[in-house]
Image 1 (spheres, rainbow, N blue to C red):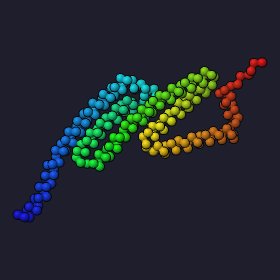
Image 2 (tube, rainbow, N blue to C red; image 1 turned 45 degrees about the horizontal axis):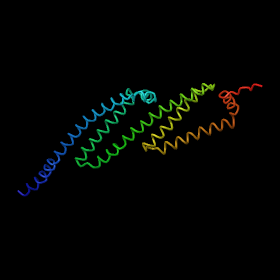
Image 3 (spheres, helix red, strand yellow; image 1 turned 180 degrees about the vertical axis):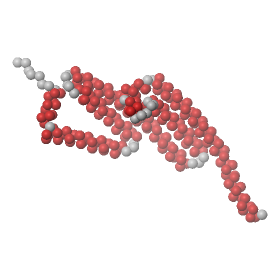
Image 4 (cartoon, one colour; image 1 turned 180 degrees about the horizontal axis):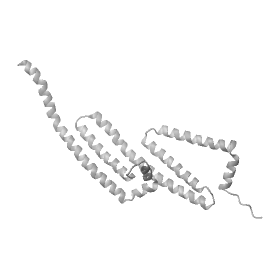
Length: 225
């Protein structure tokens, strides 16, 4: 009889642990199902609200939608925002569910991901607004230089546009805090390389070309005697 008790006691303790764990597991499943339904509803409402505010027009004019389509995506930036909001709610539900199950290590990891998603939203918003502003400045520069007679106004307008876009992307990456130092250092190295190449071209072998280019950009009109 004692041998039988030695065998049955661990089994009884294991079954008691399962019995105590099952209610928490059921609650976790209910939380996940409710979170999934809420996430779908929030995503639908969020996307509808953004489209009602003509946010998709802003992203299209900023060039972000075109960039996504060139990459083979059939969705626009508004749908991407909806997906991010959807996963914010899903991750919140997962954190609540796993916290109820006592899985603290999993909840810590999910909490870090959850804190990153709002930063991603802000970073995308910065890129969208910056891209729209960069295109606006590029058009203004191109129009102004075209009106004053600069032949390469389109090229200079694009340079102004892309310069603002690069700066905005660096700001967004710095906000995300993902390899921002490496990206900034790489950009500075490339910028110094371009400046050095231009300096060598102007200083060594490209003085005549530079003079012709400046004359073409800013022609000098003879003075009337």
